[in-house]
Image: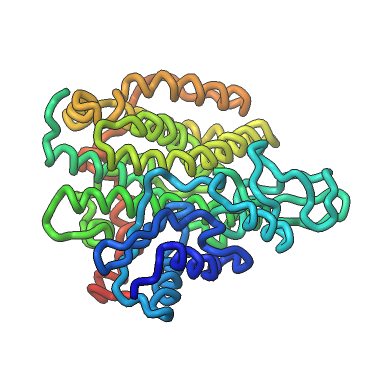
Length: 152
Length: 255
């Protein structure tokens, strides 16, 4: 029996992002669709940044997770339109980012507060960070640098 | 709307993909060498974005060509005379200031071009542009800020930036002088009119240069021959010997 699409979504919500393992690929908003085409399961995945090296690993992780649960006939489709936006991060994912020490994206273009000490006194170090999706910020109260998941 | 000639469309896609490929490789040459860690990380990230965009442009180019080649084949197995990038992006990195100024001039053109391409009549081109434009907004924000910081910095940094501008400004013209391919793309609504982009470029670039206390050299001379493939500068061949070495020495190697 073919697993339902809801079941597939639930399984994919257990696949961690390889760079930020506290959130799932579903939390990140990069799984754009799950659909059965006859006996073939088609999963549409969109890259965060066009050159993000994690994209290949993510597709492989999704494939492995589904094969482990018995879905052998599957196709991963890369979809670039509409382009990924940080608006697609789930609320659950945003909360987990904060717990992990990464400030979630905000329309204002910068973090609301330091994810460690919650101070509002924060300043930007660089718009580019350890992965394409992050910027480097610093808290001027606790003096710790931290990652900010930048808006795109 | 005029019908699109497939050979001209292929030419246009190679120009877009070769610009991002050659500049992406040039910028990646800084990895591990930039003056401070944050700049090293920023340069590597920008190079990565450009290479990612290259995969989309050259992937589409290979499809349009229809000869069974893919983006990697186009990037790694063509020789200098088949590259269609503008001369600006193949120029050597020079010092950090020269790299940043080259980036700023390219980013400013790139942002205007991609913005125009988001409404392309070719839906695949519009999709690639919509994806890329979000990344390039961050590129130009940083390169403009850094040009101002260095131009309006110390006497030493100012002089180096002015020298970089004197050297690179004559490469700006090629990005805007249309040829038959550009005219055909504009007529078919595939790409924006280059002349119209120039006005936006001039307005934005002159604001930044003024803030950076830098003055473009007089005269409208433009080095040309890159995007038509007529005559690349000597530098591109040297770059390709490094970039393509592995695929040339071990054809089909994967890891």
